[in-house]
Image 1 (cartoon, rainbow, N blue to C red):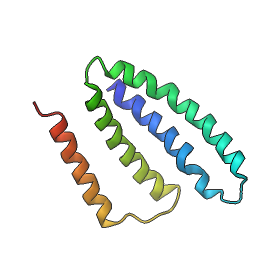
Image 2: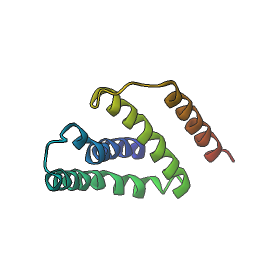
Image 3: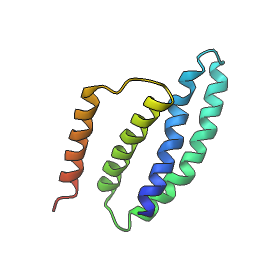
Image 4: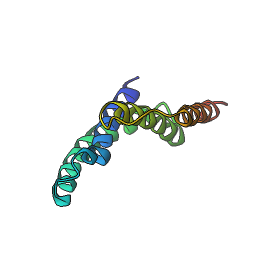
Length: 108
């Protein structure tokens, strides 16, 4: 559970680093790049330990698929609440397909 929590925190930081600046389109590009890099540094402070701890329990491929699912969930919430974008039906299908990927990744 520690790995999943660390990956979730990591993904929140990374989502803001990659997409948070979209609300500030009037800001200088160099400023948003600098702020994004600072946020990304915080993301790495959670992501690296998450993968190090998680690799004792999961394979690298399993860690990656966990991370991708967390990324999609975090991004869905971020885009709805922060960017005020609409949730569309095809997003739900994409999430279902990712759940299928998780199922097959963890199947023996």
